[in-house]
Structure formats: C-alpha cells, structure tokens
Amino acid sequence: MAHPYHHALSSVRTWGGVPDDYVRLHHWFDESKSILADYRHRALRHHAEGIFMLETIFGATLTLSSGRIIPTRWVGEQHVREDLGRIPSFADWARAIRPEPWMGRAIPLHEIGDTPPAV
Ligand SMILES: [Zn+2]
Picture 1 (tube, rainbow, N blue to C red):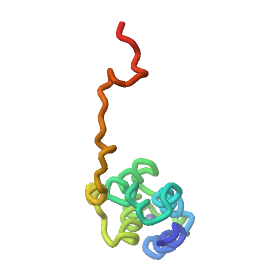
Picture 2 (picture 1 turned 90 degrees about the vertical axis):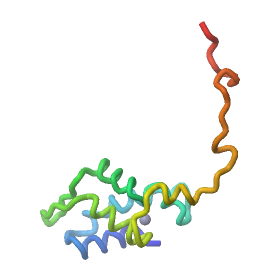
Picture 3 (picture 1 turned 120 degrees about the horizontal axis):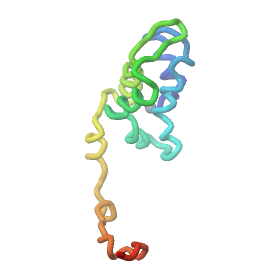
Picture 4 (picture 1 turned 120 degrees about the vertical axis):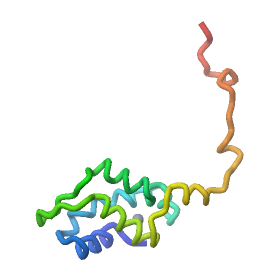
C-alpha cells in the first residue's frame, strides 16, 4: 500500500514541482484508512466519483511550485491507477458488498416511538 508521500513522489516525476505540491491531495484519498485499516478503505474514495469529488474540494486545477498548472483530476487518476491498476466506478465497489438484511430494513415512521404527535 503506497503512502501519500510516495504517490506525491510519483506525481513529481510525472509533472514536476515538489512533493508538497501534491501530498495533500494524495492524503485526502487515503484518509479513509483512519476508519478501516485495510485495503477496503479504498471503497470510500478510490473510484471515478472520488476523483470528481477531489476536483470539487481542491479546485479544477493545481498550481505547482514551479508555476505549472495541471488539472487536479490528473492527480486523482494517477493515485487510483497506482493503487488499483485502473479507475473503477463506485458501482464496481458496491457489487462487492454482500447485502445484509439490516441494510434494507425499513420501519414505517408511525411505528417509531419518537415520532411527534399529529396536530
Ligand atoms: Zn490510496
């Protein structure tokens, strides 16, 4: 499992600049390790929608310390490809989730005890 710093070094080799230009983006992808310490953490952000979320959070372009401007999405695509070998969709991850009864449990609202009384 690559550390965000090592992903940043790879970005430097591809687009120039210094690791600090990239490491916060790579760190964002891997923050989900804080909730699940094995590779399944990647289901949260390592997919096409995650790459677009990266762009929403960090902006459409990244200005490097060298002055070069590159699309933020390129960095996201690099990170996901380095970890998974390809860019999956979220649907690819969801297909790997084994459905459990509690996931589809529904209770009519009127049966929930804390429903406010009708006026
Ligand atoms: Zn990663």
